[in-house]
Image (cartoon, rainbow, N blue to C red; front, top):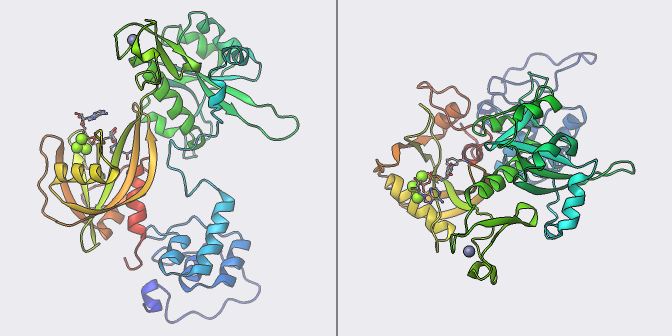
Length: 423
Ligand SMILES: NC(=O)C1=CN([C@@H]2O[C@H](COP(=O)(O)OP(=O)(O)OC[C@H]3O[C@@H](n4cnc5c(N)ncnc54)[C@H](O)[C@@H]3O)[C@@H](O)[C@H]2O)C=CC1
Ligand SMILES: [Mg+2]
Ligand SMILES: [Mg+2]
Ligand SMILES: [Mg+2]
Ligand SMILES: [Zn+2]
């Protein structure tokens, strides 16, 4: 590739005088920064200098690639390493976590069986409670409206929820927030279901506090708390839905800090050995970007329930006895008629509506003809990379777009779009 394709002007203006300053993140007409060019050319010295001068390593060019993506794509090993190390140091979770996956609590599962320990923790001064009403989280709006995230979970004290606890509502032990430093204390965290109480009392303890709709408002929670919300909401939802024994129909009681339901009928078979009717459910689902056999297009669909103009990856629930690969092949063929060969795992995401675990994959199609399942889908179509870039950046001529960055579908699509050089 010639330099002009990358947007470097052939006839440069005279060099800058020694005393002048240059904006370190200056871009050309294709959105390329100096760091991106250095990454393209594997120039580690220039990369290090630019990083020292405080350039923004997270910027993307007009085709959605960061300097890191560019170095990786062009096989610039040393440049990739320098950029990866830098990004990892800046934010160790940035590359690894999907929204709803970042949960900083130590779940301390061994403590759940210790009823005395749980009871003493509930009353401790530094324990915090996250409240829900009808599975809506109690949050505090963030002051700074210019920021990307709008809410933080309200963290209540024992005295704030003491009255609610008297009526014995579902309570879930979520884990312990470990704090380092000599003075700092660990915070034990619980979720409490306040549906039956007077929620106005809570609002008095926490000025500005409000209950928000889990979907889509919870997608505006700070990402560092999204995983705690996911754990708490999926658990409370399970406790709410599974009041009766799945084996004999008797009433069950909540045990082990909310992580188990035990049948009251002593001789019920669910009280002998380990039974999956007693433990919280997780529903594995696959979500996949299907790539055409020539690697140039990918298949997106519109479920009938989607908002107008939004396209996303195909997705579907796993069935018992299926491997992830088999589910991907079956769901893609059911929904679009396209046959899939190779399936590669991308990443996963808890999806707490109510308890899915999305297993993200990239699948290679072995056929292209589309025959849409009209029961589930409104449409399915192949899209080329440039069109996906327009959808990612909300610049598509028809107004088409893909789900927001909080959805794993967005991340899988973005990572595929980035794996090319010449858009
Ligand atoms: N995080 C993301 O980016 C996205 C997540 N999703 C999620 O993926 C999941 C699966 O996708 P779908 O296309 O709806 O699946 P699907 O293609 O299997 O069709 C849904 C149908 O499957 C049946 N079904 C089988 N097992 C089920 C279970 N355990 N729970 C509920 N229904 C079950 C029901 O009849 C339901 O109507 C959903 O939870 C959806 O919310 C879907 C798209 C994007
Ligand atoms: Mg589906
Ligand atoms: Mg399906
Ligand atoms: Mg299905
Ligand atoms: Zn039973």
